[in-house]
Image (cartoon, rainbow, N blue to C red; front, side):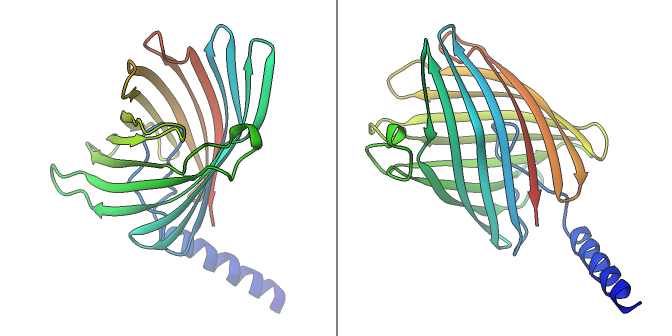
Length: 247
């Protein structure tokens, strides 16, 4: 009887602990990253598989891309991004790990009237922490400010502004995203999004995507998304599926 009571106590304690936090908030599947911080002392993983048709002669797969997160404090999370890619150009195929990214997310402010919930995300690439074919020349940063407005109980508006570098030149690429999220039910969420990348010396490319998330438990979510390029220099289309969990 005692072992049964111990198991029940553990399960009950875990359930109460999970209920003390908001449901899991993730940076996927859209390009707009959330300003929410992983709860203090919790570990979160967000992983996904992506197929992208770049043009008539080029395709790429991400198998997978994973964002590892840890809530160090209520206002600060540690982050690590690992990504294994396969690329095919004409008949030439290459695969490997691209440079690891380490970084953090810092809460700036909570939502207050017209003032959005805001956080800062910064990463630094490790050029030699990659497969031989994907090693970069320089250790480079990327950053973005992520903002979110609550429009109603079901509708939210999010947007990001930032820059990134490719590890081979000093020229930045500017980033923007704009997304609307809609809660179909308490478990099923949806979004549509506009996002783009603007290199310093080249034309910007713009993209449109949308998708769904499904909350299986407060700490476990699955997602499905797809998108298309809106300009001639953007990828033709992509689709992705992913899972996220926290413990």
